[in-house]
Image (cartoon, rainbow over the protein chains, first blue to last red):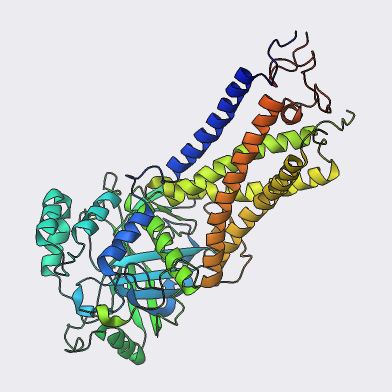
Amino acid sequence: MHDPTSPHSPPRRIGSWTVIATAVAVAAVSFGYVGGWLAPHRLTPEKLVNQLQDNAGTFAGYRRNHAKGVCVMGYFDSNGGAQPYSVAQVFEPGRTPVVGRFAIPGGNPYAPDSSVPIRSMALRFALANGQQWRTGMNSMPVFPVATPQAFYAQLQAQQPDPATGKPDPAKVGAFFAAHPETAAFLAWVKTAKPSASFATENYWSLNAFVFVDANGRRQAVRWRMVPEAADADGHAGKAGDADYLASDLAARLAQGPLRWHLQVTLANPGDPTNDATKTWPDDRRTIDAGTLVLEHTEPQDSGPCRDINYDPLVLPAGIAASDDPLLPARSAAYADSYLRRTSEEAHLPGTAAAHTPPEKMR
Amino acid sequence: MKTDPNTFTLAARVLHWLMAVLIVAMLFIGVGMVASVSERHEWLLAIHKPLGIAILILAIVRLTVRLRHPPPPLPADLPAIQKLAALASHWLLYFLMLAMPLIGWAMLSAGGYPVMLGTSLRLPPIFPVSPVAFAVLRQLHGAFAMLLFLTFLVHMAAALYHGLIRRDGVLSSMLRGRKTVPALIGYTDPPAAEGTNEVDAERTD
C-alpha cells in the first residue's frame, strides 16, 4: 500500500509538527506543575522558609528557624528498655555518641534568650552500624497547630508590620480565633516563662513516631527528655545578658555532665498520631529507654552541630515516621534551610550576602 | 541472531526504554519532592534514592552495551549540524545519567547524611563531610536535573521529527529490531514498503 500523502506535503507536516509540539508542551507543562512553578497555590518548603525570613530577617549562614543556639556533645546510655519495641541499634544496651544543639525558636541568631519562653534540644545519634537518628524537640508538650498549612498561616499572621516592627495584634488574634486547635498550646504558653537554663527543661518530640520491633510489629510512640537537673530558676538570666542560656550551660558543664532520661510513651490504639496539638492521656505506659549524658559545649559557629541538619525524618531501622503531616513538612523545610545556609557558607552566587550585624536586635 | 548494523541490539532497546521510563519518572519525582511539604515529600524521597542507584547501575550496563555494539549509523543525508546535535545530545545524556546519581550520592555524603536506600540498607559515603561541597553538589544536582529534562525534551522532539517528518528509520531503529527502510540518501518519496507512519511500518502489504 502506498501512502497517498507525501511526508513532505504541507498538511501532513503541519499535523506532524503539531504532534511534536504537543508532546513537548505536555511534558514541559506537567513538569512545571509537579515542580510547583505552575502551581502557585501549593505550599512549598521554599514558601515556608521565605516566610520565616520575612518574619525574622535573613541571617546568612544561620538556620532559618531556631537560629540561635549552641552545640553540645555527649552520649546516650541505653538501658535496653526500649528494645522490646524497636530494633534500632541505639536501644541495645550500650553507648551511642551524640552531637546535639540547644536553641531558641525564631530566625534571629541575636535575639535575647528571654524573647521566647520555648527552648529546643536537637540530637544526632550516630549508631555503630552507620545509621543515624536525628530528632528536634521543644520544651512544650504540644505544638500550636497540626498541619503545615496552619503553621504557614500562623507565620503569615505573625509577620511584623513594617510600620511598627511588630506583628499586627488583629491579624494574630484572627489567626488564633480561626484555629481552635491552638487552645492547648495557648493554655501552656500563658503559664510558660523563659527558663534561665537549658538544663532544667523537658523536651518533647511533639510529633508521634512509630517503633518497629524484630517481628515488624509497629507501636506508635512519643518521647521526651526529662532532666535530672531540677533547681529553681533564677541563678542565671542576669539583667543585661541576652545570652545567659549559653553561659549557664557552660558553667554547669564545667561542674560535670548534664543528664536527661529518654522517656518513651506508648500510644494506645486510637490515640491520635497525626495531631501534634493533642497530648495523649497521662495513663499511657511510659518506658525509660536510657540516659542522655551531655559533657561539652561549643559555640555553634565552630562546633560540630553547625553543619548538621536536625531533620526529624533521618531515622534508623526500628524507628519510622508516623502519619503526622508536620513531619514531612519539617523535613522538607529543614532541607531548604540547610541548602540556603550551606550555599551562603560556600559563597555561591545569588545567596544572601555575608554576615548581618546584630543591629536587628531588639 | 545475526547483528544488523542498521538496528539497535535488543539489549540496547530494552535498556533505552526501561531507562527512559525510569529517568523521566525520576525527574518528576525529584522536582515533585522538593516542591512538596506533604507526605509526598517523604515517599517520593524514599523512591528517589534507590531508583537513582538503579539508574546508575543500568547506565553503566548500558554504556558497556553501547561501546560493544555501536549504534546504527544516522541517515547519510542528515545535515551535519543535526548529526552533531544528535551525537552531542546522546553523550550529554550518558554523562548526565551517570553523573546525576553519583552527585546525589556524593551530596548526601558531604551533607553528613546516612545514605539510606531503604529502612536499613545503607551505602557508604563517597565524599568527605563538607557543607561547602554539599551546597555545590546540591545546586549542581538541581541544575543538571533541569539540563537533563531539557535534553530529554529535545531528544523526544528529535525522535518524533525523525519518525513523523523525516521518516528516515531512526525512530524505528529504536522501536523495533529491524529498520524497514535502509538509510537513503536524499530520497524524495517514501518507498512503497513504508507505511503511513513509523508505527505501522512493519505492516506488510
